Length: 271
Image 1 (cartoon, one colour):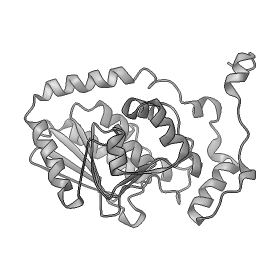
Image 2 (spheres, one colour):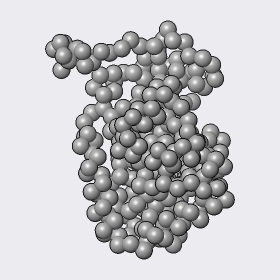
Image 3 (cartoon, one colour):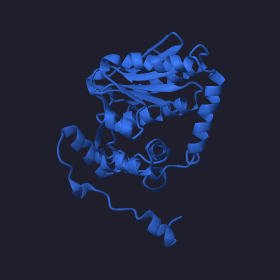
Image 4 (cartoon, one colour):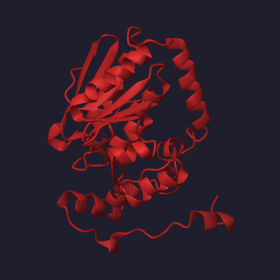
């Protein structure tokens, strides 16, 4: 497959995967994530590779989330890969480093915090946008953030849709290291060299251990799948997507009502 949305190279036992859509702040579409899955699987299968580095073509963004100009009901938005790229990141035996320079927002932030390490430049910004733009994220990928920064901070990040500086991200445990942009690649290479000096198989076993601690909900269908699987077809989803693209206030009249799932479960109205 010829890569269009990413750059992929290998050198000195390191695989470098770069989202290459700077014109949209490296926002991803279906083709982007499909290509990332292919490159990640290739890195996983190549025994010469000891560590994988994910980045975005700079200087504005690591990844600004999903490209909201794509139709959410099609594969142009979601992609067609049979194995999700975040699953490959989690399950491959090699450590994966997010090299963040610029905006790291929405699914870009999820991508970064699901990597084993995150190294950021001082000009980076982190945050989630799902509740604001009508992206119904829920389930393991959302809940895992509690393992990274704690429950209270994870709820703040997801439910308030704020942005955080690299220093704030470092202080909450979202980022491992913060350096100036001109020193970012050198800092990532320092991490890579430390990794390469350690036993590959022991690192693999340690990665499995960390993942087993946090993966007990991974195979459950997400709350979105269970209770609101048609959200992307709703007036609210379309209104929030368009408001984001058009840079205008959201019409709150389009908001869906509360589902009251837990109350209905208590009353035996739903399972």
